[in-house]
Image (cartoon, rainbow, N blue to C red; front, side, top):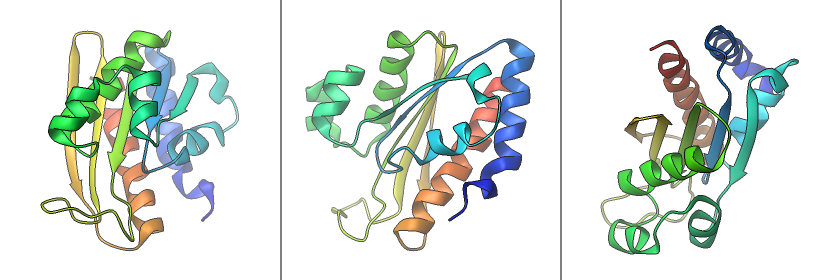
Length: 162
């Protein structure tokens, strides 16, 4: 998969962030850094992309992002609560105005009752506001990861323009 497929959305995001003087940080689980890679594949991204954290394990979510272990235990790593906590934890730790977090089941394994492969939560945070969206995606592992990045970029552009 060529990262250039994301370039139009990344350029729109870059324009929206630059217009506000904002910087972005991402916390990724099931996408494993794909969102950060798409953002930094564009020349000039250092103007607006500050950092990416790949928090693939539950321990990484707690130690790097401050997600309470009790939240993971109560709701599972793939949940709205954990996605929100990831976005808010990164916002508290990074010198940025906007964060986005991704947690999901890309497959082919990992499904649990009520959470099939393709279940993904994304959450984004700005000071005083956090929003989340549930994605139910079809396809193989690569398709789920790519569709997640597409959805994340759409959400980020909207958040940066709000």
